[in-house]
Image (cartoon, rainbow, N blue to C red; front, side, top):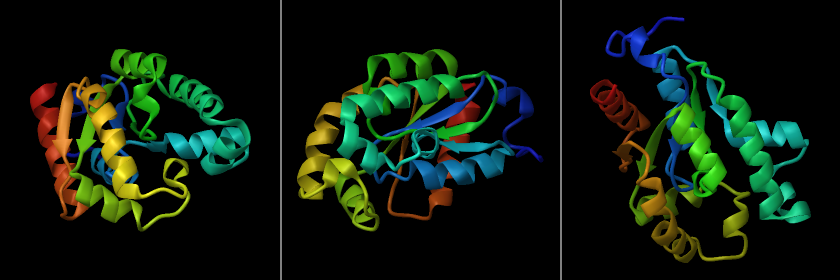
Amino acid sequence: MQRNSKFPESKTKRGPIVLIGMMGVGKSTVGRRLAARLGLVFVDADEEIERAAGMSVSEIFARYGEAHFRDGERRVIARLMDGVPKVIATGGGAFMQDDTRALILDHATAIWLDADIDILVDRVSRREGRPLLKDRDPRIVLTELAAVRNPVYALAPIHVKSIAAPHEVAVDRILEQLSAWH
């Protein structure tokens, strides 16, 4: 694996980089590109949960409820906090759970990807299977969630605004922030 010369190897020895933020902000897409630029492995926590459970996130929510999902999510994220440098994209609610948030803040570099509601609404409309949006108006749900979640997301040491631009712009902003932060 080749590392980005703008991001020296020594700067990745702090363990995982964890992307947090609202659904639709681009954590998975940006995370994959960030990992590629850094020469690191990318892990989507939701995909790991689905693999462990043998069912989709939507199915877990429908069959067992959100509390059961959050417990599984915490266990998966705890397993990923192994000190090995990698990029992890979490689900939008992961950082809202006290135990999960503590794991991330103690064992990783947390980066809050933030975006305006209009951008989030546009992006979530492109993908099905978001349990919190089922049979609801995405703008109302996202506005309500942002009011509760954004103050908690703000506990992350690095904040990056995602705008209506190619995802590489967000990756560049993250690399700049990581260089300045470490």
